[in-house]
Image 1 (cartoon, helix red, strand yellow):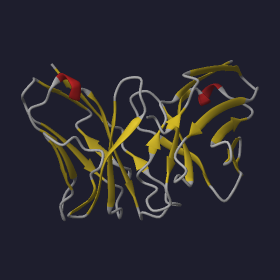
Image 2 (tube, rainbow over the protein chains, first blue to last red):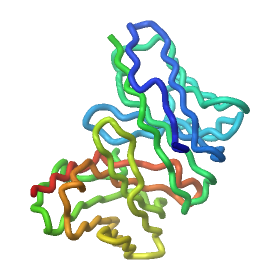
Image 3 (cartoon, rainbow over the protein chains, first blue to last red):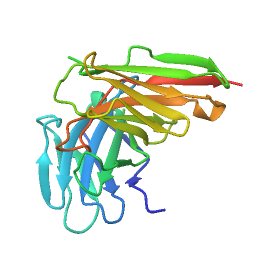
Length: 115
Length: 113
């Protein structure tokens, strides 16, 4: 299966802990996007990264959230000092290019629950 | 302000009939539109897209129509099948980066046998 792989699928954290969500894009894809979906809502763009660079983080909360896509290894979305409002499904997508005609492939998501 | 709106949270149709899902947008900068299908506990799957230079795109049972003047698009599924039951998301982007999309809240389609 050469699709987008996200892990863990489910993550439970207590308030104040850190959450690390990982995303391995489709092999050969160098563009990665993170989205968040709250219950009963659509997906909201958070951040767009290329290898080793953050290109667009206009959807990222200003505090506690960070993302990286290192030269080697998966992209990481990190949430520090989690709060109940961070509970959501986090999806990662990857594309081959950033052209408008390219298809974005989504992973199965990580469901974060903050207790 | 929600830039992409799907005003019908749910739609129920009989197997074999047509399903029509609607979507409205407000941002004139959007020039590329996509429909995604999503099953519970899975990620969205790309279904069909349309560029703003077209008003119709067809792929098998799925057709997307775009009315730029009304800032409205619709997805037609005909004939509908029970396996089409899922949440359908409308998404819009500009041509500089299709991976960064603005999503509607989704419409849950139920196709009854």
